[in-house]
Length: 345
Image 1 (tube, rainbow, N blue to C red):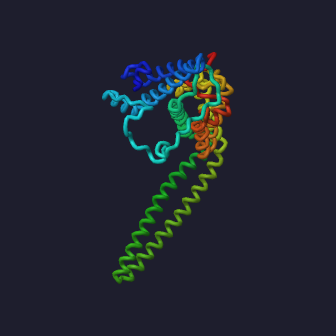
Image 2 (cartoon, rainbow, N blue to C red):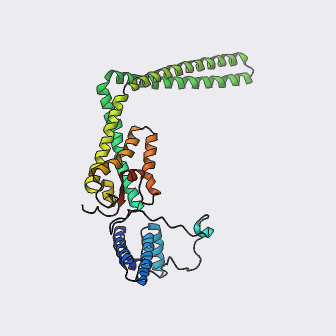
Image 3 (tube, rainbow, N blue to C red):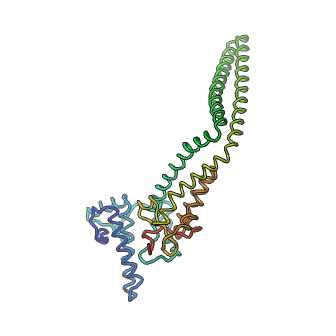
């Protein structure tokens, strides 16, 4: 039975980063043997050991599977992915084991990268993207909540003061309307109780009170709608300034993303996860590719309300189904995300 720690030449207490480094070094060595083997037997042996290496990484990189493996190893029953050691857990309904179908292997990438360079793992890439998205969200919130109001108060002070008064008036009117509705409901309940008790005069008075309260609430609603229409008209005057501020937010986001990608191949998020952006030949992405890569999703997310953000996330998430792990922005820019620095950097 295979000892995964011995296969990777690491201690059982090694951290994930140490295991990853050992896995990558051993993988590169075996892939070189697989490509350059002088005989079919040596290539076949390299392929077999490479398969064991992939299984070792799949188990030891996942905390849950690693805990199970360590427990079995401590009992002297180290599991072997290829061996059958009695009945295991029942396969999930619909799985390839349950239905008897052979699992379809993942499609091979169509790009040819320099020796030793591989497409970045999906998890590392996703974590890097989440970190960068958090930074971009902070830039956007600062721009919308601080910069935009300050610019509008500077360029349209009278309209902004009127908007503030409208906001206060609408809030006050909404409270009055809700009070009238509550009063109407209470009067209607009194009318019902009085009618059931045979007190028709009290029931009629309560119904009149309910009707008057509803009429007041309807008048207040019309006033609120008129104020909101006035607010929308005022906001229409801010459209040009709002788009200029939005453009500034786009430029601020690109300032965070483009220079580090063009110069070093990675943003702060990618630096933390040790992945790089390169062109299809493994060389530095450069300014043009880095700008094109980020301009499309950032521009859509900031400049197109609501729908733009959904489309931008879809563009980035396309990497989850692409055989070269490219989002649509990668395909447009001709970039890849890999686990090694660009060649010639």
